[in-house]
Image (cartoon, rainbow, N blue to C red; front, side):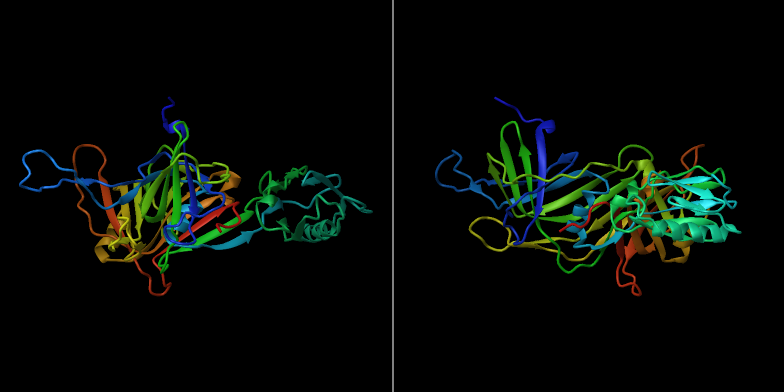
Length: 423
């Protein structure tokens, strides 16, 4: 007999068209650390008297389906969880860009390498992959851009080129992540490339708080060795919590409410689709106040809740009718080593501040992958400054986000990745 292990489980999800009805088609396979999703139906003792001391057959109570998922914070699958939490995103394609910056006008035989094609500067008589040096750096950059734009080389003409006073700027002609593979190099000691490749190509997904309706989904938790597949229908995302720390992998706790669960011996997920796993680390995180990084932060937490309320109508199947979103709550904490009066002054004066909590990869990937939570109007209560010994003094600020009247929202979440859209 095969036993179930966490290493032999899988989580499949798919958005529902009709609440509580498992969709057909191919589900998405999602990475996760732990799951308590499932339904329980307790028993109620029968207190009947007059038939002696022996216990009677108990009654079955209503079905209660809910649980927590702990998932990795990463730039691809996380867009689906944000969709379930906040509703559909606005998706925009972005083209990759790069540049080569010059400190001096090139001299003859200097080169640049554009998408593996060597381009040479010459004093005069330029042909093919060459550019004539002009009387000034600005004029040379203009000529270089013109020559590159006129090139018939298929490795070069996938991008467009522009000259500035000191640089050649390059933009991939097609939006998306493909342009991030376009290589740049310099054979000129006075020219510096923006990176070994262009960057920033991909798709930006913007999620806004306050959606009047939220999508439901079906989640199948599979125990592959048994086999047993728990199909949870009518799932909705009640809340998302994130904990910013100094070390470790970035994780998020998702609280899920559902309508019911059915146990099957075969999967109903079709041929699951997957995305490449690329997690953020905690050291990729940062906390910003009004766009500037806060100093001395030792940790932070955020929680976004939809205030979901289940509709407990009378039904013969013991299930709820639906789940409705009510009042949004967005709050958290900021822990910092007490070293300045910045947040304390905000708290004392009752100032509203913009607060951002974000993850961003280092290097070139900083332009390619980003998760940014922006809370537009945040209020801080004045905390006690407790001294517990000879060590550093910690200050803990419990913040609350509120609706911003001028922007018409309380929260914006921006996700940058290479996923075109979350249909």
